[in-house]
Length: 195
Image (cartoon, rainbow, N blue to C red; front, side, top):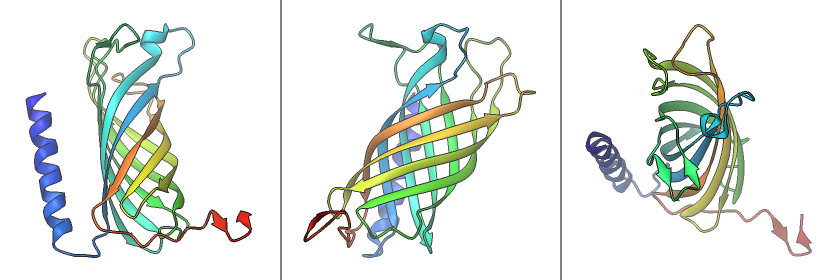
């Protein structure tokens, strides 16, 4: 856990240093909770679901495209008897996003494709890391020039030949912070009301 904390600290200090060099920095960082659903109907609820904390960094490129990197990690074994993670989950993912050229609006839907690596399930003997192909849909709603809320669903497709993890969905929801002030175009309302 200490190594993971050091990696996050180093990662974010570098991001903030880069962001501070340019007033029009296209960087954003996020923190969210996520839920993995392995979807195996024959398994118990404890084996089907896993809860994690997710941190991500995004950088806008051009023409509605951006890149996103995120790390998800199970942060507890059991939470007050409400949630129990029967296995430890760790993943690192990278995506290319497209936001339909709506980056300057306050409501920004997006789609993404990418890949990742997922640590082997701690409940399987001899399991190793698996590589996934990811497809994501999501939306960010910017509340202010810097702060937004985001939700997304990612399907992680894993080859059946890999024994460390099965294909699954990951749902995430949380906060996004832009490292520079955004010029947000409010497009949900006009003078006559909601569109």
